[in-house]
Length: 333
Image (cartoon, rainbow, N blue to C red; front, side):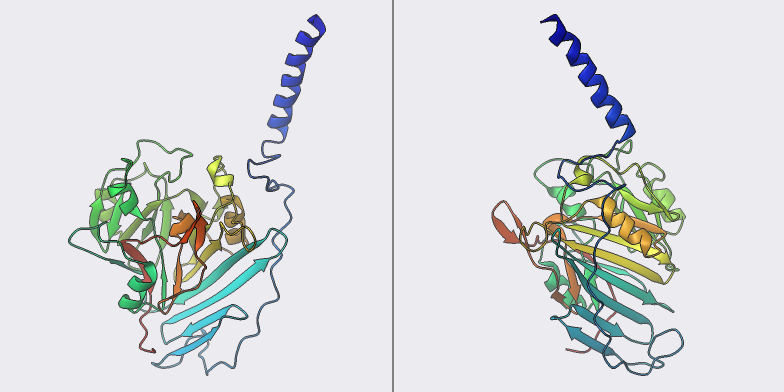
């Protein structure tokens, strides 16, 4: 008995030492740790179709629109005088995992816009995201921070600082940064095309308006700030395999949206935020924020949802939402 009593503290001490030396040696979901995990295997890129004449920056040289859609190979392209959108579907059969990489380039006055289903009563009157995107005429539409769920959901939650088109929707945020999801870190959109991420406690809503914020999305955590991956984002839920959605800026006028399909055991299990951050970093992203994922995640091209509905609690669906981010305006049916 005495020998057994002495062995327990020794085992605990050894286990504790291993955790200190290898803090991410294993995650709750079984995915390999950051230090040893194999990189994603991306499929061979689909060849570009025959493209129209473009200027030196890759845009159309004059007003007009070019659209290409190929669901089979997973390639969707839109070009105009002020907007380039290229969506590529990627697949790694080993995990399995399916995700979409959306490269967005703008010039002139082109910028991200937001729409609400009921501007007079923000956060109410949910609709399916593809219907919102279609009615708004967006070339590209995608779900945002889903603040309505925190504002009017069953469980009372702190909403976070929410600003839409220069108007404060909510000014109450968390008193400190946590590892909960969402932790209410923010992404600020400025009229000149800049995107900037910050922690939830850095600014008040009024200070953000003074800084010139056009839109503020509050979800989090921060994935990349000033070109550096935020190493504080490794809460337990952040390491679970889930559908993910993250928006990043490479430089003003050049953006990357990552949309990870998940909760589909045979096709795409989902991934953890760490992998999303590393994928964005590899693409040159300097500022990136995690948006609402799970069954909220939806990616629309010209009003059509490209990702498949996820399975949750034995139901396959995409959530109805009350607001959306989008860009571009198309007249091609």
